[in-house]
Image (cartoon, rainbow, N blue to C red):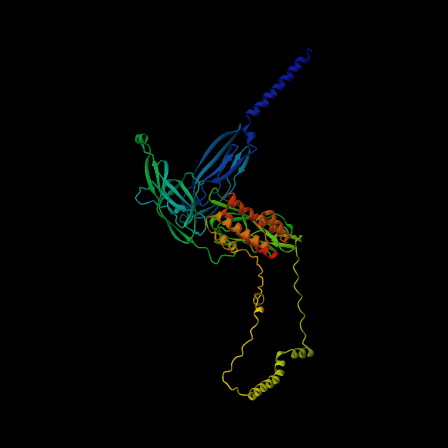
Length: 606
């Protein structure tokens, strides 16, 4: 027992030391060990637009390591300033991370495309290389910064300017219009007093835009520049337009005790008028053009690849782009004649803002009814006007293969009659054709006609001359009164067969209400026209005008289930609009086209 106690104490002491050591490493991790797991060395520039003669910053950043012996890349074609080094440390959830950056100011001497090579640095016993950068340098005249002019009547120390992101645009293309503040003074706050009227442009204010301060040299003076306001602008027609000035109030800090006591001095600044050239789209436009101008992507999916003639094929189209959403129309396709295509239904539609522009997205549902069996290939194409290439471009989806089998109500189309064998002219055929010729029989009948005329003239010559020039006309004997009954005098009327066509209100009243701002009236007119047509077509009593009886009678008359379901869906949509308060104006045209197609199809079936 006396020998075991010291041993036990030693084991307990070792356990305590190991526990304390583990806790120490957990609470105070080794930065070098941690940095080995995520060392990053990367290059970046501080601006998206690099202009000849305008300074910009090139930075190389090392993260999670301590570097030494930094070697910059070869910078041929640029004027380079000095290199500044900055170190930093941050803590997040008990973990530390370090950063070290080397920054230099560059000025491009000429326009063109340049590749900035890799810089090197030594860290943790090994040499690291940064990623190369490819940059595009544009001339000052092609840059939006080149359009900046110091407004007259100012001392040039502070002014504002409005600008577009390009000098000319196409109808429907998205432009960016912004107000920028150029100052060499300390500014505290600003207020937008007046924004211009854009006239033939649709505009939408942007919230997400770059509000960082950058430094530009204009006419030998260095300014701090910041964007105060930005809007997405969509031209609606071609021509040359002038945008009126905008007015902004800024607060300029006053030096000395006066500024401390009285606060910033308000100054009203005004932009100069701005001109823009808008070009019309080239003519003629493709038949598959939908009004999309800009950069667009799309996807086309089907719900199934195997179906029967009693089923329907659903195609889902989703398209997104940066053009004018108000000019974009739903694509309409002429697919295989083996399918009947209905008007698309808008499932989703939204407009949202990215980091640099306004985007819109539209999701459409197309219903296709197969009319024949076999394997069918469906191809979908949509044309857009690409503003990068300044021309129309076709967006093509992958072909969709669909296998259609016969359903219960399928009637195979009758094959066309076989072509008649070519006639062989023989002597007997020529004789037979001559004997059947009307000309032959006319010639043979001429002697008999002549004899008849001679006999008629001879009899007329031999007839006695009447004693009086005006003989009395003999009286026509009267029919006894008893025989002149209404039944014998009146011709029975032939009963007229009803054409069972939709009434005039179905084709006129509802259709004329399409372009009005009263959806409830449209759905009400469409609902009553549909009921009148069903009543006349199916001879239904008012008590039978419900969904169950209408569906039953239509199926008894031979209507396909898919068309019955389509008719009932229109019925339910109209009821919801009239009685439920849900009258979607954007579905008026597609509902009208669906109703018209279903009614025309039922006319042929029943």
